[in-house]
Image (cartoon, rainbow, N blue to C red; front, side):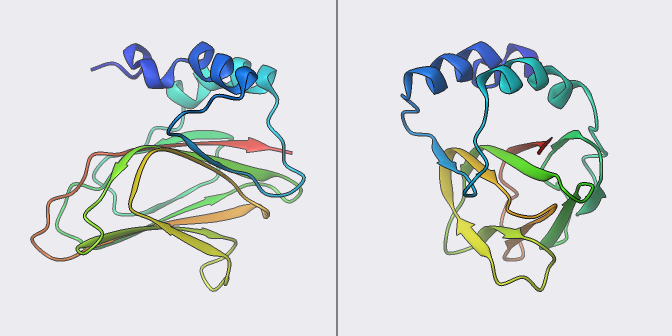
Amino acid sequence: DSLLGDSRLRPWRFLSDWQKGKLGPRTVVWCPGVVPSPLAWCCSWAPVILSSVKDKNLCGDLYEEEYGVIYPYLGLHTECLWTIKMDPGHKIVLAVHDLHLNCDKESFEIIDGPPESSSSRKFCDKPYLEYASCTNTMIVKYTRKPNHPVPNFLLTFRRVL
């Protein structure tokens, strides 16, 4: 399946929903003072899909690119940390697509700042989640119990001012 063929990732769909203020089942979490512009979403979405796609077999990694895609780790490790870091003065917008977890056996956490930061949120079942950081660093942590199957989700991120 092509990401470009996925209707959930078409920029005009999001732009249309955003302009109308009808996000349906989507959850949008913005840091105070960080407001998306429809033009930025429209014009910067394609590079998110086309650049900074790393090896799907990595359980965590450091991402310092302006745009990127993170896939779930498909191996045996039960805890993965992905760090997204931008230049000082920039923030991060993370979009989580199709997150459907068994809350008793796995967790998904977004930490705003370095790993020791107290600013974090946990999620388990969101068809769409968008989170804007308040800092230039974001940690995405996924944990699961041994022998529990890995879910199929997709993370995309981009840099904002």
